[in-house]
Amino acid sequence: MAHLSAEQAGGQNVIAFLDMLAHAEGVQRFSEHGGYDVLVGGGRFTSYAEHPRKLVWLPKYRIHSTAAGRYQFLWKTWNTLRNRLKLSDFGPAAQDRAAIELLRENGSLADIKKGWISSAVRKSRKTWASLPDAGYGQRELPLETLLAVYQKAGGQIA
Image (tube, rainbow, N blue to C red; front, side, top):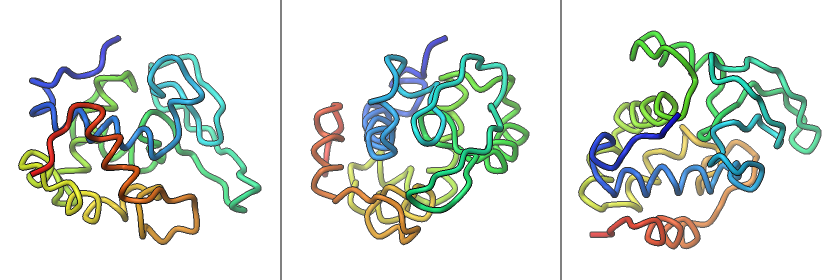
């Protein structure tokens, strides 16, 4: 199963932003599959047939979460996106499409395509807890780190 190409995603800036989100969410260190198969907390799942819907206890943050995949979709969020986008599975391309839809919804997708990455990060902070000033009480990465990851992934800053 393949993830989306730059052309399918809407350009290299979008792919680089997705790579930056995966880095921020911390999933890639747990998987040789780009993080598409990672449960919150670092566990793995083996079937892309559907969102694993596994409730995981995170003692460090004192919360339960169903986050899974490269972009750490909560089950409720995934279910909404799956239905809206008519996604047939939880594979890499479906996860990429769903993440791009969230970027469109939060108003950051147009900014990403223009290279306005600081603005896009700010608009996405309530969508992903790992972004600066998200305010969820979880680990947040600094903007400077995210911009470096974005550029290393081939993204351009305007």
